[in-house]
Image (cartoon, rainbow, N blue to C red; front, side):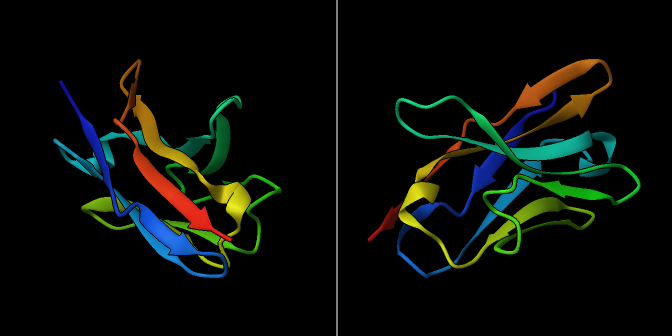
Length: 113
């Protein structure tokens, strides 16, 4: 079974940056439509960014111009700049392996104001 593991979360001051990484237990290129979502306390999970097999990228309006999703042959990344307190959430990477959608365990991002 394929697993996704996020890393890179932490505590940062408003205006700062973090880079999240998502690694797969198998070849990351075997996972399609890798996305980053987040869930803040008391709120619904929100899709933040995704990257399709052709390299096309989409972002939530709330993060456009501040977050960048990218990938290499090993991992998928989420570069987060100009962080705001409202970006505080647990961030998850997820994607499709065959017909199955798989999720990582999440990494906490806390932005202090």
